[in-house]
Length: 77
View 1 (spheres, helix red, strand yellow):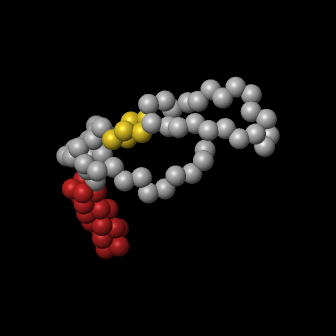
View 2 (cartoon, helix red, strand yellow; view 1 turned 90 degrees about the vertical axis):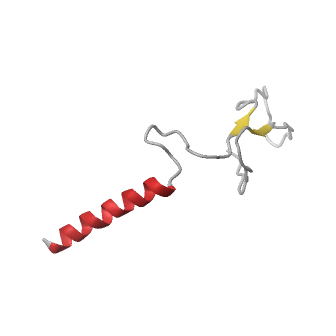
């Protein structure tokens, strides 16, 4: 019974700490100053692209948030 009580206390503490430092309100909306990435166009219509054929497209990104937006990692999708 002592282990279950300690586990319950540990879970409640984690939930409390996550609420303090999580930066997200109960409805899933960020609270306080946060960066907000806006991508002008999320899809690109390239038409037919043959294997080995190169193409170039420039994505326009904007930070519409209140603080600096840091993009730390980019991978092709």
